[in-house]
Image: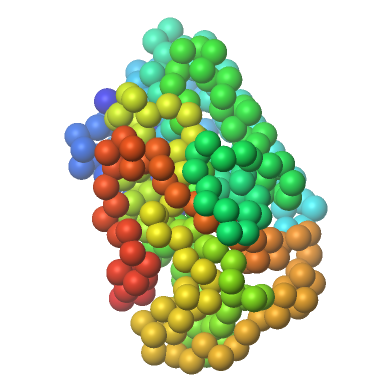
Amino acid sequence: MHIGITGASGFLAQQIVRDALAHGHRVIPFSRRKGEPVTGCEPVRTFGPDIDLSGIEAIIHLAGESVLGLWTKQKRERILRSRIDGTRWIVDAIGKAPSRPSVLVSASGAAIYGNRGEETITESSATTSVGFLAEVANVWEAEGQKAEAAGTRYIPVRISLVFGKNGGAIPLIKNIFKSGLGGKLGSGKQWMSWIHLADIAALFLHALETESVHGPVNGASPNPIRNEEFTKVMGEILKRPTLFAAPEFALRLLPANEASLLLDSLRLIPEKAVQTGFSFRFPELRAALSDVLA
Ligand SMILES: NC(=O)c1ccc[n+]([C@@H]2O[C@H](COP(=O)([O-])OP(=O)(O)OC[C@H]3O[C@@H](n4cnc5c(N)ncnc54)[C@H](OP(=O)(O)O)[C@@H]3O)[C@@H](O)[C@H]2O)c1
């Protein structure tokens, strides 16, 4: 297939591009900047209001302002706006395309489920719009859903914390633990949902290539873990003490409710992936972390 991929320079996109090429697809990267060509791909196209979808049969949408960094008012506006506008550009272009792409697989966030304590969350669980990231994911999915009206299969992948060597949160977490400042956050009892980069990239392609996949897909490994257990495994692999503990009251001092990223409990199960025959390369935390921390 001819696959258009937005946010082509990003952490997930780089892996998805490599995998798509290995599956025999042709890739058309979209980027805000028409910079360097991407190895093995067609020429880069501009990601903006007049996005050109000619010849594109499927789209993977990953572009958006990073959620890492301090959530100032301006940053929050960029996080929200970039996702609404970018998805709108794609859906408008799908509506106008003489030959419509058959599928749009888009990033979304597991934060759409909110803070759920001990509950086990599948794709059938209720979502919430309480909290900044949940609100972002809701409006993002509402825009993407409009692609269905044009006959394009729309799959939002509700991505949990992605573990990879060279991007996302792992380099930062690794530095904290290596300096001996690693420790549980708050009570440490909260569930963390996570997925290895190799698996999230494969899951995007699985959703794109498998016509029976419809609607939201949870982008998480089948084995969520409590924060205290994650802390223990990190310490063991990096051979560092994990006596430091960040008390909840201190984390709550972070501006704009950013503490929710660290303290919310989310026990995600990738039910749809499993039911449609997806198999995880890194289902267990210890193997996943050993791989990315090596
Ligand atoms: N990594 C995770 O753990 C995780 C978890 C949940 C959800 N997600 C979501 O999955 C998507 C991909 O994640 P990622 O970690 O690969 O992100 P990333 O490395 O930050 O890449 C996102 C790409 O989006 C483009 N971009 C950046 N700022 C933008 C803006 N203001 N407006 C429009 N485009 C912008 C950039 O590509 P160009 O410069 O090429 O345009 C950038 O490389 C994101 O939407 C993210 O929210 C990621």
